[in-house]
Structures are given as structure tokens and as C-alpha cells.
Length: 473
Image (cartoon, rainbow, N blue to C red):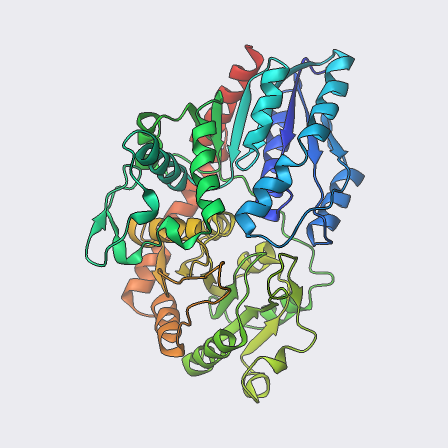
């Protein structure tokens, strides 16, 4: 059957955004042959690990999905991550308009709308030009979406400055959270650069112009947040998650999986901080001391920081011993491994892994839930603090290492979490009655995450509702 309606997907090229958006496209076209999807790919101005993923996409195109590579554009890297993403995507506006023009000229299938990454709000204007609706794909959870909408309302309707919200003893009440957030655990928007604050507040203002928001969550995980989004001014919200690429890579080429095969079940602590996660040498040494003192088996994905003042893809250390305590690798050779890039899905799926020390990026959070893996939360950036709070306090699926860790993107300096605090968090993750209860609870939520995607499940039905809304235009 030939497709009757076409959606254009415009993702950000970061792993946590692009992969989940492509996986959602696959779900949609597998569900109904009446829909085809064109994915417009913007490539970073620097080489990154995502390039190989993009090449694999274009080499194995699924039925009814087409990938269009837009020209690689130069872009200033001397800026914060938030501003870089926003302006990087905005710079492609003319290319997107040209690509959509070519699609529309074909006439069949009929263009039904644009599905935009959460940072891609400038492309709402392109949808308006072509007279089609726009939708936002929000790759994080409903709680952080609610926080963004709430902040924007404070500024736009109550004329409050959200960057001034602080106080060591107070509790901050966000409508999207069932429990108040202790201000001492909250990093105000003031930690961002001025331009980042403006972007953070402008994004949800434009979300309200769209016809709907697809959120990578499931109703059973965030029932309270999902219920209150409409009252915060959100358009129709579809909970469609967990959208994950859970295909476990082959063991071929991953020697580390052979090492895990030799470890007892649930005995290894896995430390990984996402595609952008890194620490300076001082913090790296503190982590090493904590691991050595804890005496737990460990697998640590350690990445080299970017050059100072530059935004670039992380690389593996040529010799990690140079930033680790002297003799650390020799002393821990029997119980631990320090690696570079990690095949995270394959590792979390392995029975030897007993706990996950994570930055609490939303994709990592959903993967840990999918595989029933308890987490120790060490968020790195502002949005991850809300994810971590949600996992630790609201859901009880995580232990805490450092909830108010501050990475200063302006001065380039970070807090240092000492070894005793890290060791304490690892022990809370791995041992005691509280850890056993947490492990039991995350297994229960894991089952719910899988049922949500099955026929008749909450996310299955929500995605079907989105499809029908698109086709009824």
C-alpha cells in the first residue's frame, strides 16, 4: 500500500535526541502503511560518534522512512551547549525550507506536518509557511517539560524572574512534581549563561504554538506530571515512551562483555555519564579512590574532557593512567576495568551489572528502568537535576550521590565531590535493605515500561491517537 500522508521529522543530531526520534519513526511506519516519514539530518560541524550512526541509517533505510542529509554547516563552537544546540538548529532553517519545498512539490503523499526536536522551535515558522501543523518531540520526561512551562509562566504571566529562585531552607513547589523540591537541591537558572536563560524560557513559549507534544515517557511512570501539563498551557500531550534503541549489540568487538561474563550476577557497579559526561583530573581521582575503597567490582567509562573553552565531541584517553591515582589500575586489575566509550545498552542488559552510577540523562534513566537496573544519581546539568530528583524522591528508583553538583559553564570550574561521598552513594546503591527494596521496585516499574508499548498499553494507545490526529488533518 502506498502512503497517503507524510511527516517530516527534524531531530537534533545528538545521540539522546536523534536515536529516540528515529526509533519513534520506526514505530509509526510499522503501525500503519498509510504513513511515510522523511527525516532531515543535520550533521555537526565537527566529527563525532553519531556520524557512524547516521551512516548506518542511510545504508539501511526502513520501508516508508527516508533520510535526507542536509549540508554540513560551519558553526561557532565557542559557546555553551544550550546556545550551541539552539543556534545550530536555527542555522538550518533555509535548508529545511528548501527540503520541505521539494517534498511538497511531489504532491504525493500529502505533507501532514512537521515533528520537531525540543530545541527546533524556529522550524515552527516553516510549518506555518506550508500551512501544516507542527509537533514537538520532547526526548525527556513530562516532569521537566512541566518545569519549563512553569518557569515560562512565572516570567510571562506573573512577571517573576525564575533565575532568582533560591534559598537554603525553602521548598519550591512545582505543579508537575508531586513533592516539593528542596531549594538546597535545586540549581536555579542563574547557573546558566544569560543567553541560555533566554533560550530556556523561550522554548516553552513556542511549544504552546504547536498542535501537540510527544513526550518520551509512559503514563505509569509520571502520572502526576502528565495530568497537570494541560493546566500549565501545554497543547495535546502524547506519552509515547519509553522510546529506546534496545537492540543489544553483538559481542563481537566488545571485549568488555567477555569480562562481564566472568563476573558473578549483580556484582558489578557500572559508571557512565552519557555522551557528554566528563570530569577533570581532580574529580577523576576522587572517583577512583571511592571505587578502590568500596571494594566492589566496577566497570567505569572514563572520557577525556574537551579542550578548554571548546564544545567538541569527547574522546577516549590514550592512556587513562595519566589522570588516575598512581598504581590504581594495577591494584584494581582483579576487580575492575576502566574503559572509554561504552556500549551502554549491552552492558545494562548484562546479568553481572548490579547498579548504575549515572548522570540521569533521560535516555539513560529509561534504559535503566527497562533493564530493571537501580541507579545512583549524579546529575551533571540543570535538566538532569530534575530527572534525578524525580528518580530519587518521586519514584524511589535511585540512590543519591550528589544531587546539587554544580558544573559552571561560564567559568569552566566544577564542584568536587569527595571520595567518601561517592563511596557512600555506591554502598547505598549496592547493599542493605534499602537497596534490596529499590531493586524490587525498579523491577516492577520495568515491567510497566514494557507493557506500555505492548498492544493495548498506555503508550501504544497514545501513539495511535497521535497517528489518527495526523491523518485526520
